[in-house]
Length: 274
Image 1 (cartoon, rainbow, N blue to C red):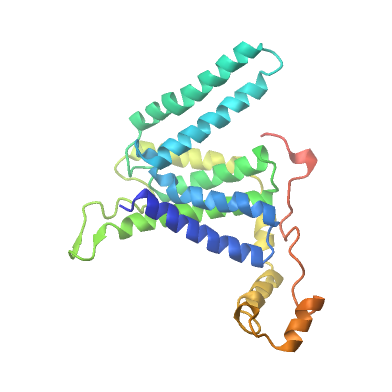
Image 2: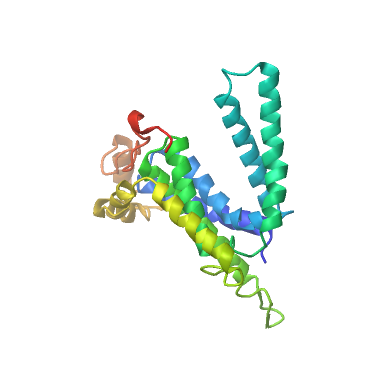
């Protein structure tokens, strides 16, 4: 299989390309691109969460531990003393980072159900939920982040399959076929549980209507097509004088990118946890 460096590098390149196209098409505000791009990079290493000693797994549970500990801290901030809060914060951090990490890897198998498209759908739905209800982003931005993560997840599975073919030695490794799959037929119970979790997560996601309407606008794709290649010389070097004048006056170019076709944040009334 491909190593961590390969996955993180390829994931960064793919997320960067998608972010560039998204920015050029003015889909979201530039500040939202950071979150959705990071979601794409995360998706590119997320399938290796079931590999106990992988950097992806360690970083994932470390981040989850920090997040969970602060959620608990803020929840009990007004009811407990400082010492109690410190003990609760540290206890939750250790429980998630080491306890949950140990339990998860006792119950999971590498290249099992987490290495499937079904798991990718589950994580994409979770991403949409987190971005909408926890980070307070608009539902359109939440689904864009979910799309970035799923494409990163898919790229990871494809890369692992490619690395299962030894081109120089003209042979196919025994791991071929275990990375890219809809579900894991070897562990039907785990696959069934993942299917249930994915469906439950999808039911909790925000409406995708704004996202679908935003990315299917003909004007959006026409504007992106117009900006795909430079109108004059590349990078504006030795551009015709009339083109320089147009750029200086702001005429004949797309409007400055501001909020994008997808709203920046969810309305204040919608910023509540499900």
